[in-house]
Length: 285
Ligand SMILES: [Zn+2]
Ligand SMILES: [Zn+2]
Image (tube, rainbow, N blue to C red; front, side, top):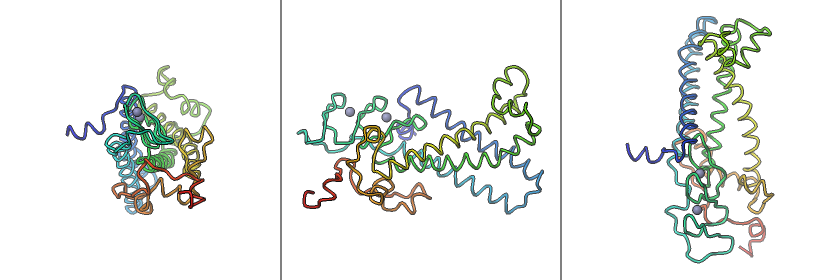
């Protein structure tokens, strides 16, 4: 138990609040769909057994992937800790005064994790961990599955919220939908109506935000970049979209994108990277 706690323990209060918030929203959404929205859909539309089974298979599949990938991100070491690092500073490397060790190219020190992270992209507050060389693929798939989950929640919850909870489309129902918390505080909405509207609004907002986030990261994958390199116009590691894709999702991507427990080996070690100039001129490698 202590072993699991050490892996998932957030390193700051901000991360702890974000991780708890994410877990509450995932499980609240799941329970809300199962015990409130689905029974209403079954009763209103006389939904058959096959569709009910499909609902559960889809919901379990999404849930399994979201939680599985969160666990993978938390349990995978993507830092320089445990790696054999040279004592002499090689070209492209830097000395991290906090880790008191040499760090490889594309690694950056994360103040929250207090480690140098291999091919660091960013620190993810919803998992409380850094996204680096060994976790970037899992992170992108996590975003993808949360996006699928929010899309499912919006499709399933939209009519329930608008037709049943808010009583149909009108000026005031739009106001209630956009500002549920304000309407609750001013006494215009009951707790139940507020909670239902808030969940549907959150799912809609997250669906839109995650759509943009996926488009944003698709460019990273395509050009073989991390966020820092993109903001600084670095294309030094762009080896063509196919190799860039494999260096993120690994050689077993066709299986691991469906099953989070299947390991998909990455082509490198996160320490040495082939540069575009060397790749295009094999004599120089
Ligand atoms: Zn460091
Ligand atoms: Zn970090």
